[in-house]
Image (cartoon, rainbow, N blue to C red; front, side, top):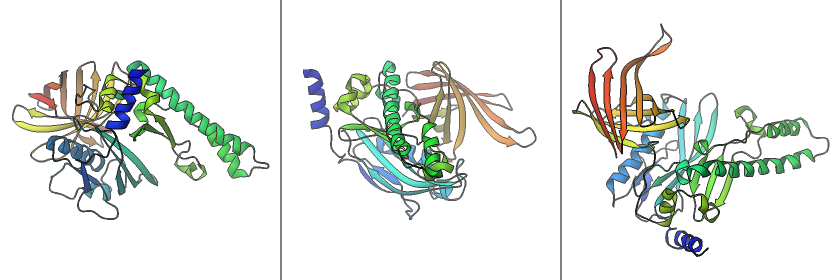
Length: 359
């Protein structure tokens, strides 16, 4: 019990404060539809660069300092998944010492326009994005998911009781009841948003409604707040060090990591590993990379099998064959924080050396 009290006092009494050394301003050119955070962290320029590179590449599909308007793709229907993407505001949240949490709000249009809010959490010891799964012991991930889903279920069930108690419910209420009775409640940490607070971790699970039913959804997204003290027994060693203020970072997976290296020993490139999905034995992932000279984003799609990585780099989409035509095939192995392998030209079959190292 004494150890638990000491740990909680450490994280509540010493570590919680705004990050005075981290300054955030607006990425230029700012407009009413382009309010986006840019980080200044003078005491560690590499961490500053990693955070800004991640945010701008991941959200804007823009490589920092590439000489063009950072918001060109988001506002001109060239972002792959949207017709436009507007950012209206950002906020720096109060967090433990080692963490930078930023929330952003905006609007995106795919098939329909829809507002969004999202949060990003960074480890200020490394500049890496914090993945929710890394915060918990492997055997506790399912337990945490069950806790969240049970809280979501209670929230939905409590509201259903109110709706079902109405006398002579109109069509709208009947539609609401049907929607909430059919609500998806099997959220996993991989797809749940989260952010750190002064003394609690907040999870944000997806709403019960699809876009067409959103007007009926009075509950919206499910915000679940859990105090750190209630999660302590589930923390991984990484989370314990992160929250206690320790300067010792633990190794984590490759998701959302930046790698830097060369192709053929002479062409400098930077790689951002993005989404991982699938099972633990054979995981698929998406990534982007760019040559440091021209800073044009190129997509990779790959599979991670143990420590081995297989990647396809596509060239163009063939209307004749209705498929992507590959430009290169990459085979590599993870060796610690390094990725070592070959980049093979699909047409010429020529192999080039590939060596990357985590930033």
